[in-house]
Image: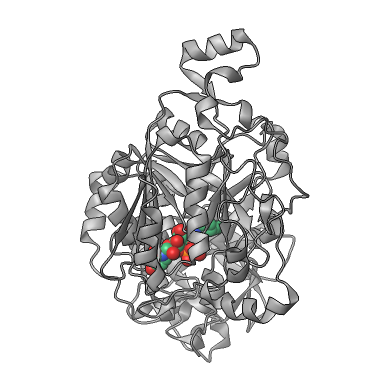
Length: 581
Ligand code: LR7
Ligand code: MN
């Protein structure tokens, strides 16, 4: 089988589809205030009172520009106009079906709807009243692509040109990552030549999105780099709130809210508020809502900025000098995947911050599969990228990545040379991953536990118990606190702060203060014994040469460690609960 662990499914980037909310029709001037089609009319005239205008001028501030050159569309009735769902005519169903694979979304409909369609202003109320500085930094927008669908790529570029204050866009750099489609060469250059701000570079070989972005960054002239995918639609007012954060502190990395462009009907949908970017082991990106009681307690508003442990990856603004100070991305990452983890860990651990800015919104077409080929095996490419990130950034927590069932795939992978990346981390004096978990992502706590509850010995049907700070076994009692243990992904058997371990050279069992880095406290159990599946139910001391197991000594009614024996039931143990990966 190609994918024994079903990694493909788990590594796909999930649209927050369950959360996507269909809009109910054109509300172009909704909560968000009046939009203005011509940027030249902007700054002065828009105050509520002359006093307010006076204050803003004195403070060097203005209300976010609501520039939108698509406001009065040539053809209001066009399919997909205002972000409405479009439908394939009956006689075109076959054609639409056949063209799906060109981009793994409804390419037929993308070609049908206007490349400069209007979409609804989905910003929360209050966004259009926010003030930003007059002296925002300029930005270079970098869009890299490989074999992107023509109409989708153009719509991405037009949405930037039509909905950004022109003076803030230094340039738009399109990086063609060695596409095979002919129209992305000649025709694209010709089409874009009408926009002086658009520059195109054609890479001579396939670099993958990570190095393609770096090629763009190298030649960028703006103060800030803004990365976008090649199938997006930037919404009104998207840019200034991002640049405002970077201006406030150059170590802030600002991400828009990523909204959903339906892969089926191309409708533009908004998403639930209060979503944080997070990951679960083994480094899968995901969204996690801020719990309602937290929102209530801290009176969090829809417009409030959300700090995120990790970013989705594709859409963000970062100060250009800061990006290079951080050593950019690890250029050893190939094709797709892992770079969002790398930049997120690097930013947080080396003194920066990752934020989602709710007043900045960009739609993105989420697809179920990459429409382009991977030069090498897809799974191995992504896992190798992640292993590089784990090796450089996760310290003793690497095992949380490796331990989640990927041992077999990863064991034979050559992750390449990491000297440079490790030196970089040292030079930047970045904090530890432990610090990151405790301060930036404290709610990852629960998944650290792989199993918990009573620990039953199969042969004698009795349970491990803590008695006067020593370890023994006794009749099981679910109500006894002294029989509750946790088994962590770092392979510690914990009772509070105490960890099960041999306490002398003679095999006597007892406790040690827990320490995630101390290999002498680590026991292999369940799936982690991949190299010796017959010892699955055992507790195998990991650091010893000879497999040594926790065992009930029946003659003396005590516990000891002894040479492992897969058929010995006195060495088999079960936790009350096992948690899914
Ligand atoms: O070899 C390649 N060369 C490229 O230039 C592979 C891809 N690319 C381009 C591609 O054409 C596209 O414009 O890179 C961009 C991203 O590739 P996608 O659209 O196939 O990726 P994705 O949207 O499925 O994946 C997300 O995760 C990636 C991990 O490497 C990148 O960080 C993407 O930018 C990222 N996309 C987003 O964050 C948008 C929101 C997704 C979510 C949640
Ligand atoms: Mn994408």
